[in-house]
Length: 276
Ligand SMILES: [Mg+2]
Image: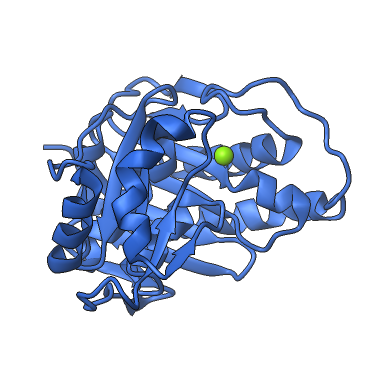
């Protein structure tokens, strides 16, 4: 049994988040200006200087507290630290929504998940920080999900008519899967996509939206590792598009499709329409 419970993960992750906030501030000045691409990160997206600054901010704080861990990052890939790197796995998307950040759209986050194995089901602590609004979502396995210390719960609304549903349709393969969503889209009056999937999952967790759907098989597990636990601990439902439990390797190259909903009734509603 690893000694994960003796460590105050919330305090460590909050320090990480504070450091990210401090370190990315100077990059906000270059908002709306062309920022150099630094080549592709481990997850395949173009890296911006702000992505690496945020990653460094997280690693610097972690090294002050836990000497040994394996970093699984969208930017740097998999990196081992210390003598016993398999003790903890830290899965990060330093900035989720970098495009929003560089365009000055106020919706981007930092995501950090801790696990004892490199798999989604082993995540025991997760933090997603809404960096623009300075709101922090945090979940600890078995202890519920919180936003700025307040317990959060998802929507209990069962009907789709009034539901606000997030839908990520960004893909060059949109023709291949959009027909699977036709029946669902016909039933929803309020479709949204804000551009930072970790944060959009937190919106499901706290009932801001009713569901979030991404069936592109394009989202990386590094993006949702923390938010996955936050949705579950809040009391929401998150499964594969066919309704199976969600499980995947935590790796910047591993992609995943999922449907997250506020409650099981609305979830079944959505599943039946996606399969239709
Ligand atoms: Mg990112």
